[in-house]
Length: 99
Image (cartoon, rainbow, N blue to C red; front, side):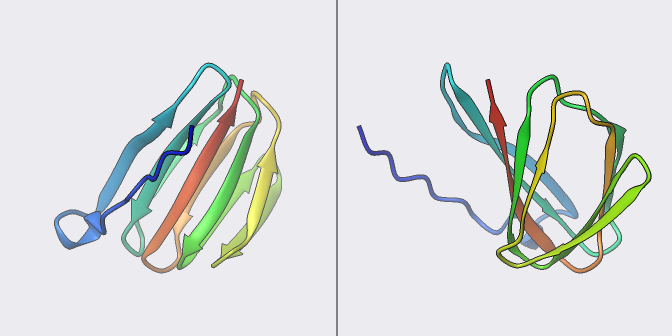
């Protein structure tokens, strides 16, 4: 069954927004919005993930590699891959967790 998911611009109200917007037995989707300079400290995911940038520029540091992603870029990470995040500009991206 189709489901339309709408996301608001949360950066009008705060510097950082992390919201789960979809969940099923096969996947979860989280919308992350960060103001310039905001970040997320190093962490990992128990599931493989796709990062899909919707707007802005965001830097992902994965182990020894650094990836600067912009509008429409997609990054894949295996489960348990350590990474941190820093917004280069105001940014809005989706994290798709594959179960």
